[in-house]
Length: 205
Image 1 (cartoon, rainbow, N blue to C red):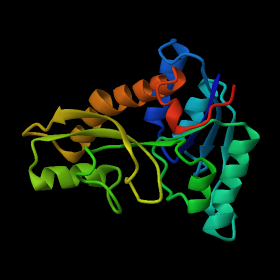
Image 2: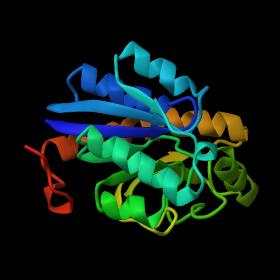
Image 3: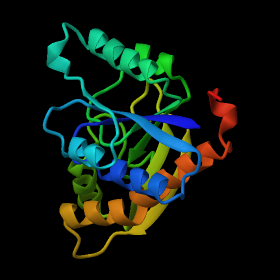
Image 4: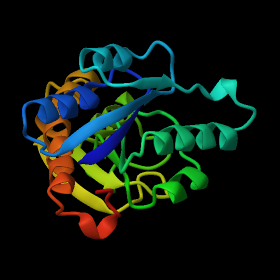
């Protein structure tokens, strides 16, 4: 059984897509054993209740330093014996301590075709605003491993979509989620569950 921990900060739409895929059997031998939110009012917590997934709210301001905050998250994930950590709209930068604790076992979904529109400052709606301002014709989403460089880890999957002439940042964001993010994130986790990425991490039997 692949034991998954998910980190969220907001609505949790990718968390929903992954949970649905697990529940309907598209991702085999996998269980989300812990949901961690960086905010107390994240709607993702309500989604977690529907799936009866244990959750914790770990807020940065409750800790004296960013390092202490990251250590608290590591301890919570380790207590739940998590194999793989998924970032699903998690709006905090992880420390090197966190990344070292789960080296090559942290995945993120980014709403562009990395390396385009990625790195520091590119998150959420800002990505789609930049895409439209630049006038590019194709955008999409990327699933990648997380390392110390923002959006700089190994790319595991990408899917492109066409930018429409009448797109706004909001409509583009929605289509990137529906046509790319919600499809490739569950697919990558399915590959991990099936052992196709075993060379990247140590699984717990």
